Length: 204
Ligand code: SF4
Image 1: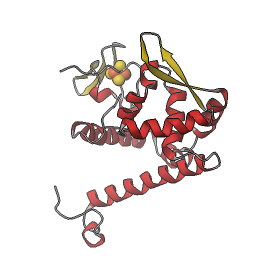
Image 2: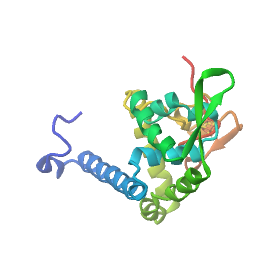
Image 3: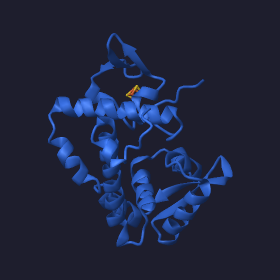
């Protein structure tokens, strides 16, 4: 690993890796700004907007509990609980008791929360536009490399919950390609998933 910071502007000019890291940081800034823009009219933080979008697209009750949201977004339960309190007070989500455990509950969007989440879930369209202007091959290569970076960050313990092919119990390398045992089918690079509803955690 280089000892110089990627953000050292002199060192950066001779280091492609550093320029890529800085470029990714700029893109993460764009996500933050776009989420702020989405939430500010409603007085919501970027995190609260992300929760609403997550709830909209993940119907599994276990994923809609405070504990899971904390793991998913790499936050403490206390931080998530605070953010959820605002969503509850604004009538954007409601608590759904868990019949198997009286102390536990999952979150459900109200009609108003669902409408807001639906609108907000397009927040990243300006980021998607230039990506979709790339050729199919370039998009597939970009996806492969990004999945590789996420896999590394996951293994290094930087980001926890991941539901992508590379860390799924059903994923195999077959020959020089990718294979999903659950669907019993080879996967082209473009078919690798980042957030798969059928993903299963590797045990052990
Ligand atoms: S179940 Fe989903 S995440 Fe797992 S290998 Fe198949 S497509 Fe990939």
